[in-house]
Image 1: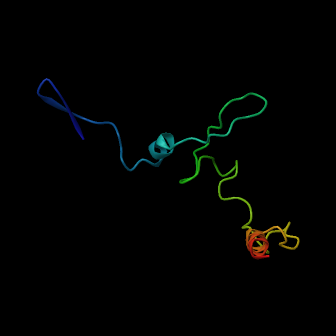
Image 2: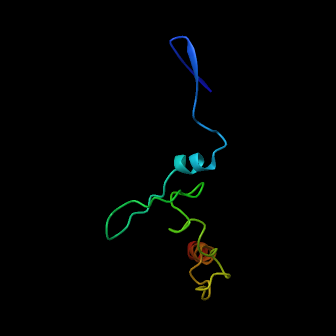
Image 3: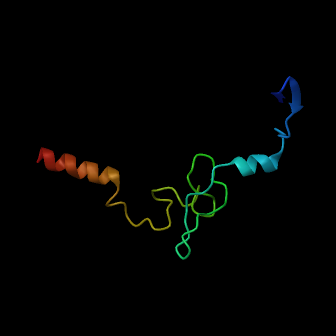
Length: 89
């Protein structure tokens, strides 16, 4: 990429293949420390507002595979069936 000044071309110092430059330009995590209030400096995971340390792509899927799954009595499907039954009856 050339930059023109006064009729002369100057070569840019930006290397498009530099992985360090890509990390420096990446969006940052939005999490803040409770004690200091400073923002996390880690790059955010693509598609998320936070880094991997602060919860991106973490946790389990909802449902019977989740470790805290009890019985499903309050799941969205059961609640929808209860509402339908109450409307019919």
